[in-house]
Each structure stands twice: as C-alpha cells, then as structure tokens.
Image (cartoon, rainbow, N blue to C red; front, side):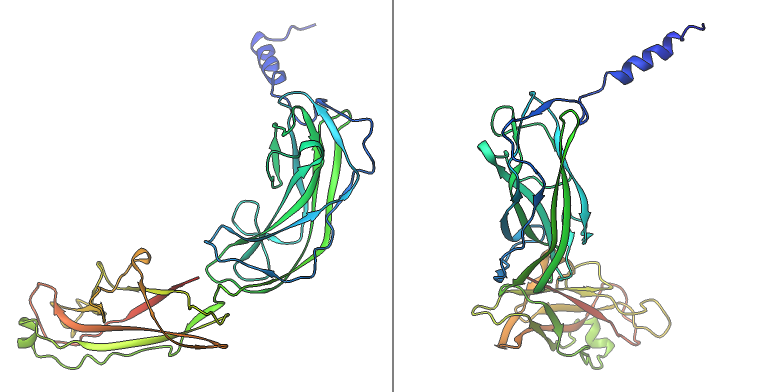
Length: 339
C-alpha cells in the first residue's frame, strides 16, 4: 500500500476542521411541539394601506400577519447556526437587498419574520439569512409573525394593488435536519398615498428664449440685455393641502453653475468669446448639479394636479476671450426633483 504524501494529509486535515454548518446536529426538538410545523402566511386584510412619505430605501408601510401553523421550539447549543432560505418569490429583485419590485412604480416589498413563542427572535429577519443568536438563552422558536414591508425604490411612487406569492424554508440543525416551509399564496395588498406625485411633466415640451441680436460693441462692454423666461410643470397623483416641494436643476454644455456654452462652439460661423449667463428671478445662478437644485414656485392646484413654475433670466456674456460675431444658440435641459 502506498503511503499518503505528508502535504496531502495536511490538506485533508484542514478541510475537515471547518466551522459548524446547518447540517450538524446542534438542536433538539421539544417533546410538546404541535405538528405539523408548516406555516402559512394568511391573506392580509382588505383595508387600504396608506404609504408614508420617506426617503428612497426606507419603509413606507408595514403589515404584520399572524402565521397559521403548529408551535415549535428547539434547544440548541451556544453558537448554533440556523437560517432561512427563499424558495419562491413571484416578484423580481429590485436591486435593494432582500427587496422585490412590485408592479407599482417606486414600491418594493420585503418579507421578514419576527417574534416567536417563549421570548421571540432578537429582531425581524429577512430571508435569506443565517444567524447564531437567540433572544431567550439557547432556545430557538418558530417565528410568530410575517412582517410585510413596502419599501420606496424610486423617486416616483404609484398606488394600486400588489399581489405576490412567497415561500421560504426555516432550517433547524436537528438530526435529521428539520425544514419548516413558510408559504403565502396570492397575497394582495391595496396601497394608496397622499404624499407622493405619480408624475410631474412639462406643460410645454419645449420653451424657446429669443435672445435677439446684440452688437459686438455691446458684447465687448458686457451690456447685452437680460431676457426673461419661465416654464411650468404639472404634477399629478394627489391633491395636497400643502403642496410638497418640487425642485429643478439643469443639464447642458456647462462647466460651472450659471454659465452655458454655445452649441457648436469653435465651428465656422459660430460666435466666439461669448456664452449665456443664467440665473433665477431671485438672482441665483442656475445649478448644473442635483445637490444644488432650486425650488419651483407653486402656482395653482385642483383635484387633477398641481402647477409649479420656474422663472429665470438669460443674457449673452463674455467668456474672457476675443469676441467675434456669428450665430449664438444654446440648449438647456431641466431635471425635476420631487417626492
């Protein structure tokens, strides 16, 4: 018989010295458990759920549903790993951890489990997960509630019905391993809100600002007149007592706030030494970054929506180089921030 090389034997020993896993027998079931231990997530109440105003990634509303199933407790060794895996989810992942995107814009759903018999879980836990801490000494219990949380996933937030089916397995490291299924079928939740606009759209798709003709003499003395402009947006989705803020920032051929380069700058026939200075009607430079967005003014409202307006001033201005005549057009895009 050939002897095993020493380096190979060392590798085998290292592989056998791993951390405890769920497959190891570290828990034992209590004698008074009440099978079957399978758990059902019951249909939620048909009452309408109102979503609260929160930042993206935060919980807008939650519903706690009492699980239907047998009672079960297990005695486990200190540090024993237990966990839950997701076996079925009819919704797609949203990109946020453990949050699934519903058919309603800006609304995701997260399913967690919490509280149990004889002391409960330390906290709400969201499958998939593994844990080794217990709320009550070394006792592990089947969770008592399903926690359904609706999480904001986008700037726009809609309203309507959310329907999904969900399944998860609770894995307890007994001998043999105990696998307890949690199942919810066609769970329907009716969601509404009075805090979010479903959309904010321009009243006019394009706004043109006639800049007129300016002589090179006036440009060299930086005496071009200011031209006022404004644009309105219509926001739908609620009829608030106090209209929420709508803010705006801009995008274009710019390197700093309040200064827009000409289209096709440097090409033949295009003016040089000139740009367009932009500011609000309150004298603030128009921002080209989201974090410096300016508020729009609320103009009017009715049950069908709210009107906001932004007013500004544009004028030709020197950029410090030699001024030469030519066409002097520029384009600007505005971006709305709301909800």
